[in-house]
Image: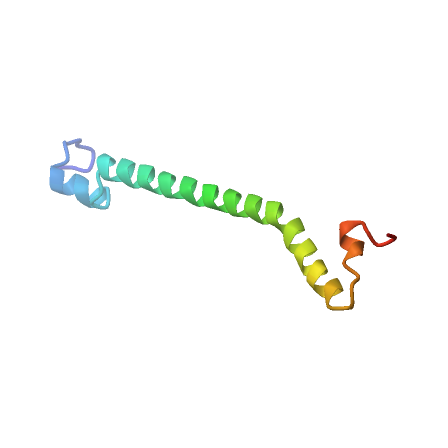
Length: 83
């Protein structure tokens, strides 16, 4: 057979050229990876939202503890410092 002759590849030859992976395998891996990526992004956004929502309360709680240990200065956090 000369170099210019075209022929149909056998299934074994196709597997070697394609690295042994089929379209179905690649598609399933892509879909599974996309689902994992979406879940990771959702977790990241939920964690960031929770951190942003809770930070002010945590800071105020820390300030109340700190000012309370200084002898009754908690009014600075609650707004009753002048009364």
